[in-house]
Length: 208
Ligand code: ADP
Image (cartoon, rainbow, N blue to C red; front, side):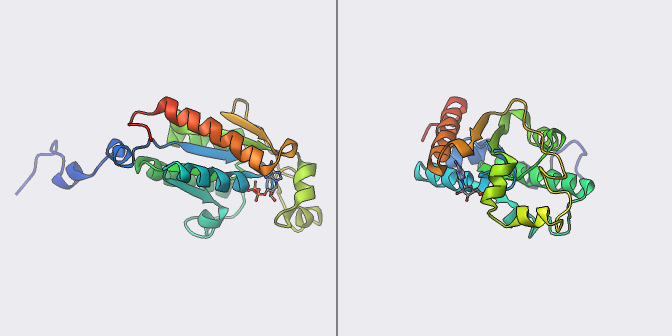
């Protein structure tokens, strides 16, 4: 039996789309893209944001080095080519989560405007909320959460963002958080308020 080329195969006809998923979850998905130096506070804020959103009934997913670099991207290094491929795959994975109606929170240094534009173009501008988690190199080096700054200073890490590889600040982010000027709790509160306002403003489904 042949099917006309113009006919959609019945299997594809049955796959539920983003709107179906959003209705099901009673939420609209967005991608919150945290960018900033290592140790600037991306993960800290993401964890707090996720907890606060969950309390209010929103389903979220955090993507970070821990669940991406160890899995889907474990074959990638830190050359320019690999950094680009890393972000491309992250953006494609984020798109799958968005299509599932899930609010996705990404924590990646993503140091250049070009690399973040790549992600924005894959995901679509409307869903891409860029949060610039801003702390100076000196401040992050003082925190040195993962001991990376010491290693970079000793020459054990090459192309370290902020030292011998550039970090380009976003020109027009959705939100900027200067983490050296406030407590982690204050940072989280600021991001939560901005995201909730945006979610409610853009909501196409019945609000929570
Ligand atoms: P990143 O994910 O950007 O590499 P982390 O969240 O792992 O950074 O580490 C940030 C560190 O900075 C944590 O130890 C956190 O407690 C500290 N910190 C201090 N002030 C703030 C703030 N206002 N917001 C977020 N983190 C802060």
